[in-house]
Length: 87
Image 1: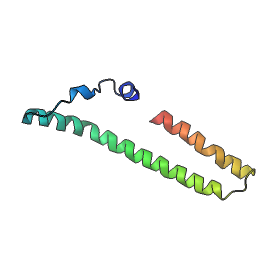
Image 2: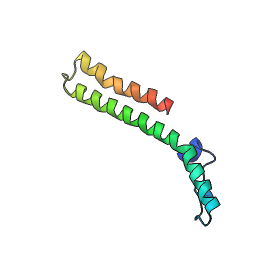
Image 3: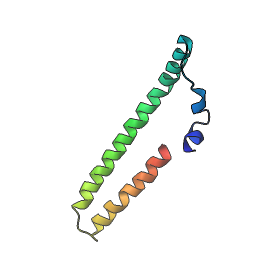
Image 4: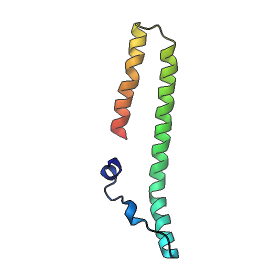
């Protein structure tokens, strides 16, 4: 799966029911180690989503077939390709 390709050490099987304080702390440490990256990715995707929303609103106001319409139509695809290479 894509998850395993991005994080080859990820395994849902490594997390079993918590039965001790030591195990609880281990899970908490794992979560905290990954949480900042998760928040950063979430923030990036929110910004990208807002950019696409703004592009769409601007594009809807342009005349179909005009040069500005075509430029605006192509811009989100270029941005998407750029952002997909970053993420």
